[in-house]
Picture (tube, rainbow over the protein chains, first blue to last red):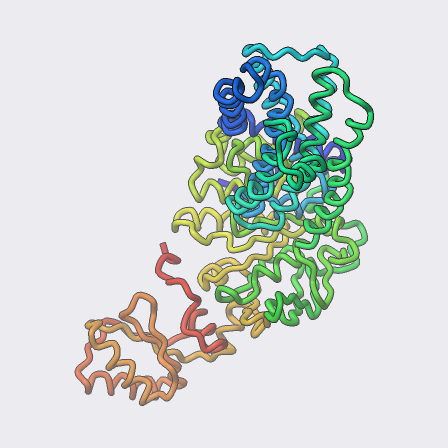
Length: 268
Length: 335
């Protein structure tokens, strides 16, 4: 057990030099990686729903919607990637809400570190999760016969776009995680807000047959803009304006919500 | 190697106090959780903030640890202003909150390496620091276990170890032994004493009178956001008065009757021990105590024990606040 002598010995280690903000952020990123090691089942949560969606829509609805499952998969796969990333953001909000409830963040806040670094670490974890989940879905798509016409470069550009989308959406759920005490409420609220965005979009079907009022919404829905750009990037023929339109929401969310996060965090 | 003073001490050393607070206020809506508290804690002291649940202890501590901004008043911690220089304050303190501030998914060692890296230890140095702390706190064998598998006592030890990555000038401990079994509690007390001997100033909150009595050089009693008394344990007891009569009954069933008799004769409120069969009351003089005992004998109430002496801290608290006890049973205090 601890005694004064061993404590005095512990005290004799020189105080290290104050680390940089970047170093702080990387340490929190390392924490996110450790979480994958210790809680690998979180990946199961992340990819099961999109895998089931892919199989269900391709084989059950695909033929009716697009003539054949193969043709439908070609249309659907970029969209399911967007859906995966958007829904995954909810889990990081839940994780944050859990962390905050346990007093872990009180320890972080009482340290002399860059205030935003815990969130930068969360983002690192999010991005890794997005990349892993998207790779798994893409792999399954390739096995089922999906072919990205734009080739490797197109897929890489699409993944970069997914990271931007995940980054933007991440702030929404970090803010919710900061505001809401119970993780399950974060989840319920998150999905309530995301369901209309994801389903009233062009992810599953071409909005051509929808009533005018709905189509008007679908066409300006940021999720549709993201899906259109992703289809263009993976299938070839993406235009600059498609990409710019898809990035408006993530950029705007980051610009508004990153400062909000800092304010909420320091105010607590 | 020659630097044995706590690393958080600023070079200026202007203030001799580790903590100096004036008129601190924190309100939540209409509730004045902390309502104008002054506090002076000299360096190297164990200082206890004693009070019932909801008295404002945790809120006060959170303000001093820069986790919550005061609505009014000012304070310096290790010579740094709380509001003007929060970063400098943070570099000089560590806080172990009421709920374990650890990542349950990570191992004990990973938790400490994470914090060591945040403090600026790099690579191998961070790991060495973590291993030294684990060894000092008797956690080497559990180092690679996830914290979720730790017992309450192990968690608390790791939590305190996590506050010593860089030895702080001031260590804040919010209810350090709440929820621990008697053996784990004794371990934590030993640790706290060891830290104080090594020169760390310790501010702890507690709702256990015995804990304040055992550990702290000074005690501030807080109720409804205000400081209602401060002093050494001895001073607080002396201020309440000596000449307390303690009686233990042979027959618990006659407790109510005995209490009524004592109250009538001595004209002071009677305090019951949590164990049930003991009564304490301010008697004033041995003569008055004698008369009261005679009354009990006359009523046929048999005593198993009686004594005259200083009030317990519980009686002090009762005298100060008019509340019979601190919410929780004291039973589990005494191993």
